Image 1: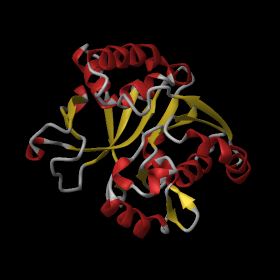
Image 2: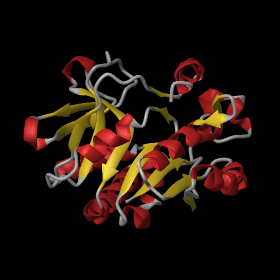
Image 3: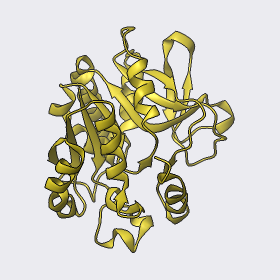
Length: 245
């Protein structure tokens, strides 16, 4: 199993920081970026290889590749997304379809979270699950969050932002454990998703899997402070909590 980071997005709501950097390389703790924090988490749980999907301002990631490898003791492979500024991240994850065949822990490149999230996913393995989503069942939800409804052993029934928050079981935080056995089915669902509408999220690919009868499981992360950085308010929160991790 290896790490996988989606870091291709433009992050337009974080300008001017993202005029010259991808969102994953915006500093959140001194010189540390979200990408630094994620790579540190992967190294701490014993991963030795990480693939990073890059697109917007990808040269900034290429420039830091050797430095990041040395700093975290990881072998990094960069996967180019040629439509990063045109299409949404269902296509971005599909670009890593060969990587998925190795089994991955996937992390969005804009999520500040502690290593306990990865450990929770690893601890949840072993019961035949093929895809396990990290789920925050504590946070009060609003319209922007990626909300999830689950049904006991049947796993995820619905995953979308377009849901009444009161009906949701929790929020998907942007970290997933994907076993190698799920790679081909997930890649096919992602392809069907972006071919239907290139503006769709990879979470819509998860929904496509569910609609096909595939069980997508969840692992509640408990009382964890984390943030998805979409805008300047989120960045301020990320900088407040990143120093803890």
